[in-house]
Amino acid sequence: MLTNNLLSALAPELIPAKAKGYFFRLYDSPWILDKNVTFNITTIPNYLSGRTLDSCLRTLAFYASNLSAGYTMSLLMRFQHMLRETDAREINETILINYRSMLTPETEWYLGTIRSFLRRWFKLGYPGVSKDVMRLLDGWVLKGSRKGDAVKRMDPNEGPLTDNELQAFNEGAVRAYEGNLISLTELAMALTITHTGRRSIQISQLRVGDIRCGKNEKGEPFYVLSVPRAKQRYGSFRASFKPFAMTQELWAILSAQARNTIALVENRLGFELQESDQQQLPLFPDLDVIATIQSPYEVRQLLTTDKLHIASVEITETLQYIVEAADIRSERSGDQFSINARRFRYTTGTRAAREGFGELVIAELLDHSDTQSAGIYVKNIPEHVKKLDEAVGFQLAPYAQAFVGVLVDSERDARRGDDPSSRIRTEIGQGVGSCGEHGFCGQGEIVNILLKIKNSFLPTKQILIGL
Picture: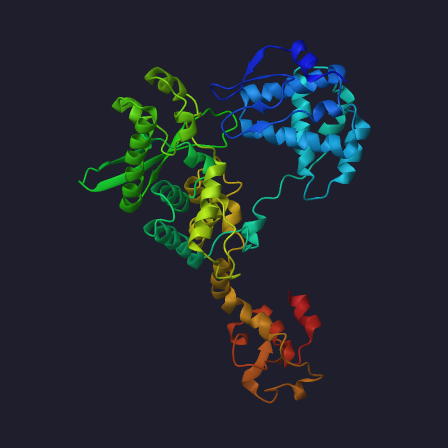
């Protein structure tokens, strides 16, 4: 097998990643694609070699240079899984058929991701993926990934929080701050996540200038947070934003954090920044990187990248630290929360659905590009089931009553059989039996007559002919 040094010599050029300021070499490991995504490619040479290995890495590099780092990471993880499970040395029909047989209905979507990767490989013209392989893959109908299981099950460890749990977290965070257990930065991180329902990577990309306030035409104050969009496959760092209307209380906390950030950064740099540079500082900066900067020029260069921002994983770690510091417990399990930003997204979507908002509104609220994921919140909401019960209960009552009585052999044995007013007639006026109740049959609907079979004598053949 070729050594890493020799492999690097075969392709020494630096390849630009999609994120500005990041580069990698084809055969060097790891590939650092942005602040949040770093992965090793060392597994692939353990299976593939020669031209097939080179083709695989060049296809992966295409994704790393043109699409998001997160999507590229997903492709790599799925492809490496196939290599490990099948011990593949090349990509052929047998490998793919065997791999599919190993997958469950819950994991079949892995192969869908691999199919996208191999299709791009083939279109780029690199050797290693044949027409027969593509013909096989294109002929398969594969299940997509299952969305929203934790939401549907209201999972106490992974799903949305209850109202009491959400309140407990917010109050616990404030209590921890008042008790000097957490910093202003940690409080601001937590409350921004819980109030906006945004992804942790979006919060990590916020900058001082994203916090805004003003007055509308009526002279009323408004407070807006411009949140960078994420999970846009072809999107760039802070290329597009969605405004979020926030409360005055959250605005006050974030404004205090912005002032705190400017002071911390300038103190760490040892010189003051121009106001325009201050506005571009990360709201949650990586102070270790800040400490290495030598000049205002270097600051401006780094501000065009994500290198001054914290990694999104730090936000998840902060949320969990707050739970532990404030000893915040779930009302359902009695244990401390297992918490992350995703659970607050689930909570925001679930609460919106409970208030009666539809998929379009929920998708906009959570900054989705479509309504595919928003639908999980509208479905299977317990409160919705209760409202449906109330809405259709009366209409279903006759059907329920039809199954709680007894059958009789003749009209003489029927309840109210000797009461002339209980007579039931078909549409042509022919008597067919007697009603055993004091309601529903009087409405004159043949379905209601059938429902009274429980206590009545009804010649059903005549009725069915009438139907």
